[in-house]
Length: 221
Image 1 (cartoon, rainbow, N blue to C red):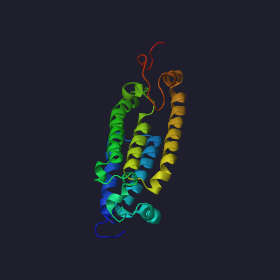
Image 2 (tube, helix red, strand yellow):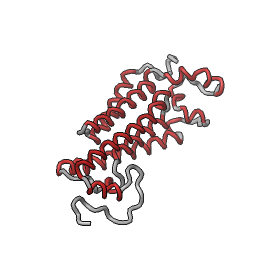
Image 3 (cartoon, one colour):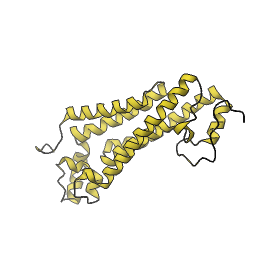
Image 4 (cartoon, helix red, strand yellow):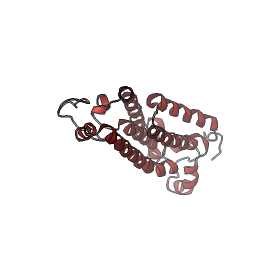
């Protein structure tokens, strides 16, 4: 695994990439509450684990090396490109960076960061004004920030699946759903019937076609 062209053992590159994506996410998200920081911290841990394997130590290839070599003898599992496991398993022999799973990962990661960037200004204005965020993407889903994180994590998982990230992914999705429920209990306590109305009109995570405009906070029903 430490062949000259393996592309591993590059811990500085791993640190730079992890720091870049963590800072990139922070620049869009800017966590304020303890729930924000918990969600962002889980995302950061996932990213660090991912790039530690992508450029540092390929734990997944070591653990699965015997099985992979026996079942896919045509693949050079010492190469860095072999870390794109889905492309290798499904027989993509061209540059894996142009493979279908890698391209799909770019769409998911880009979509997730776009959703973060669209959600933050709306939430920030609402928090400063002491009201519910009900416009923009918050008119389509109640927790776009957690949906955004899941989209980015899914994209990374398609691009470079590892044993650690595969194991942590469902835990993170469950944790984000739990954080969302805790936030909702806080909003129900603070905003009361107005938030109940918002919950009835707008789904939590998966948007649906709106039949009409969402009422703003304080509008007479």
